[in-house]
Length: 557
Image (cartoon, rainbow, N blue to C red; front, side, top):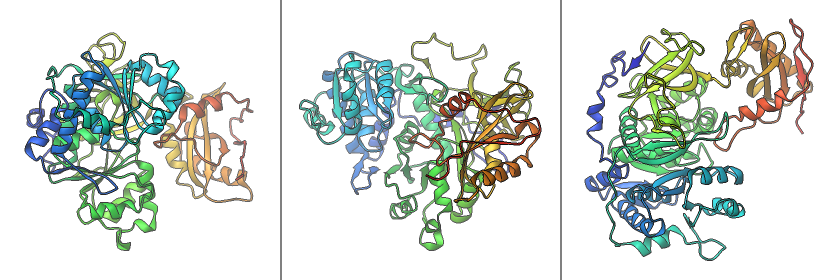
């Protein structure tokens, strides 16, 4: 069943709002016009607050963007030249990002957590001629500079480089302040950003996002998240994501950037900053839900808080329940991907549904299709999620135009999910992660959810293991909740208990005890690397009835 801005459910009055109702609030045809509009409306309002207490108003931020754009005309001549920008959580990012757009250049976003080889891939694929990097990223790039012949100029977001001739952003802004700024073309269909996919199923691809993609999605997101000029957004993420920046600027909201690793301690900053929207990752929110120090009854309250918003991956239901009970505000999540600027779905703040990513964003269509036949599936049946809407990318860099779409203009996300009777989306897993056992579709994420409910298990990940009779069977890595004299016995007890609650084709047939589950810097499970390692091992075949094989029980040392 196709879902397009479904009717309001249980009293919601916002789900059916037409796209035009929010699109008319866009700042202009370029993404930097979002900031121009905010600065014109409230130049003295705080746009950014940082942990050190500094404040940057919309007016001052807009002036710095002008200066950077003027500087780029000299540093990187030629329209649509690519400028790589490290997406660190600091004011340097919006200055360089919006300044690149204002100069008519294309910003290629760089994850500042990337290591050398990945940095080479991103910078070389994008064709960046100028890069605005943190000192830490610059030190990595410096060691591979010989592999980046097109990179001509490097600027540092802060401080000074050990090498002479590498200026800091502040120096460039000071030198360009007041310099005449040539007006860039205002083409909504022009590429504004290159955003790289996560690379979980192969080398990251460069996504071409237009000014229209980004400005529309900023309005869609601000609308769905309930952001307005009175909002104070607590941005507690490892990098600066475009969605949070553009949506807050679109709404004229204040952003409080927070980088301290003390998760419960973040509540004091949120309380002091009168935060209304608290954004973070599932792993941090799970810690917040479990930590006694984060209890509002123990001075962890944030009276101004209106919502807790999770992104990046699925928030465990127990964390959602815990946070909802503690803070008495909606705890919600959405769904999106780099190719969609990124948001396509978001749960309703006035009527959240546990485990759901909510209905499609305004102006967005979504449907579920059979993985093999591509036939559209009815409510409740699982298949691949497809989307279409104005926030959908122009295409992949270097690919044929339209190659990412089917004949009906639908984009296949590679994710498995289903919708309920109200059009709310529930994401199950990645197509590359699901597998078939005896021709039954198995979701590793679902199996992990059952396994994690066992008292013996602190953390787990499940992947497929090839099997000559069933095609594939489930293989689990588990982190035990405490030291056990018999680790193998504890792991077997956990898995047998979980298997008793699942159909046979989901049963775990192998279990491995490990110290930690391999994850990326931003908390995502490195499932592809785990699968490759598991597939490369010579292991005995479990019998049809069991027993389970406990492999490489790592102990605790």
